[in-house]
Amino acid sequence: MLLQFPRFMRFVCLALLLGAAVPAFAVAYEKAFDDPAMQARYEHINRELRCLVCQNQTIADSNATLAQDLRREVREMLVAGKSDEEIRTFMIERYGDFVLYRPRMTVGNFLLWAAPVLLLLLGTFVGIRVIRKQTAQMKDEGPEAGQS
Amino acid sequence: MLKFGIPLALFTLLGVFLFVGLFRDPSYVPSPLIGKQAPEFTLPSLQDANYPVASKELLGRPWVLNVWGTWCAGCRDEHDTLLAIARTNVVPMVGLNWKDDSAAAQQWLRTLGNPYSVVASDPEGRVAIDWGVYGAPETFLIGADGKVLFKHIAPMTMEVWTKEFLPRIQAASTGAAQTKG
Image (cartoon, rainbow over all chains, first blue to last red):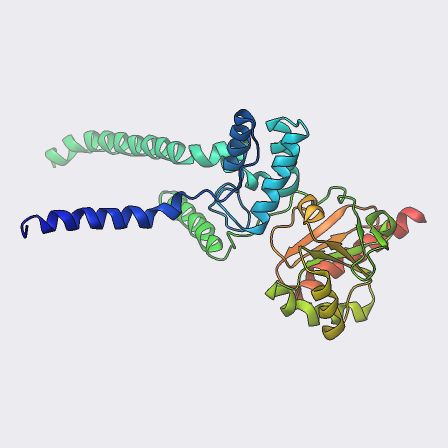
């Protein structure tokens, strides 16, 4: 019995940890549609929109009043037969690109993402040129240095 | 000279970028409404629900929209500043009472003083969403042509008012006078 106690405790610890982790998965929002396809669209759109009060959460994750209000807008627009794209446009017109949880591909964003690669290429290019120049100089100077 | 000059210049440039980055507020979301036509609204007045407040009626002169609520601590902070601004009587200040209890809001204005020409009541927060409001207090400046000229997100201060709002109001007024003349 005594030997088995630690094993039992391991299960208890695991159970406690899992229990503690549950609230993180609790999706705050109410079930909005009986139709599973509509509910799926609703959940998908909510996961794509940023909650502006709690900026590292989507409006699906947040229970801030603004997130609740924005979910209501999404729900009502879905009922009104708006397309996903129309709902996104509605949000961007009001809150800007920032409301999108996944940024759009724009010239500015492309430069931002490509900058590390571009800078690395530039650095390599400059490095190679400097090394070539120095090797060439050493070759020129080499024999002279040997003669004197 | 060039050999050291170019890397030094690049390093300084990077340093400047990073230094400026230290003082920027990452929670600030710039409004896409600036320069665009302000969203129209018609809402019941806070003081008398039968009396509608319509944004259309404000066309023809610059005006200010201040988004507030009694639940908002920053709104309490800026209230005295709003009262001082209202006393200067430069532009009409319209209040948007956002997701608030009307009785509490009326009580607030009675005890603290009322800086607003009129207050529109938005308990469901629909007009606030149209205006891209995400955190009270927010203050918009709207031109005589109905375009949004400026948005300040944070409690209003006299410094912000004199530096950001007043010059824009003056520019808007002289611009309007010129087109009239």
